[in-house]
Image 1 (tube, rainbow, N blue to C red):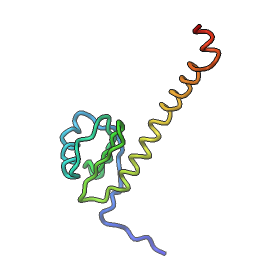
Image 2: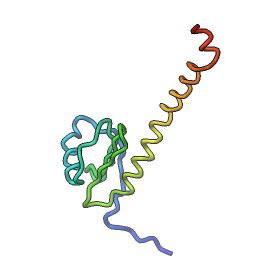
Image 3: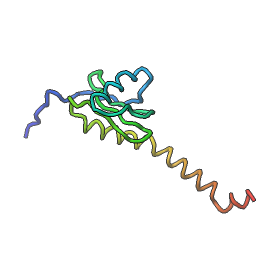
Image 4: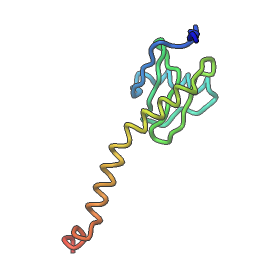
Length: 109
């Protein structure tokens, strides 16, 4: 079985945090998607030097370029976001467990 190459499939996708310089492109992307601008911080997926999809790390909302296939890009951004927030969540849970441990409560008394 041979693999058919899709002419519109990007060969390189870049996932990164949005910077202040991305503000105009993020606004344009949200407008194209008939959505409100995303709350910051934001992860973006670029293909061919163009922002194609973005995901808010603050609330999980996403926008994508309706003229390009972006469902896979949004999923990629969600996976990347989960990897970024997992260590933070684990640190918060460890800290809460230490603060709320019976020994810590007795020491605070």
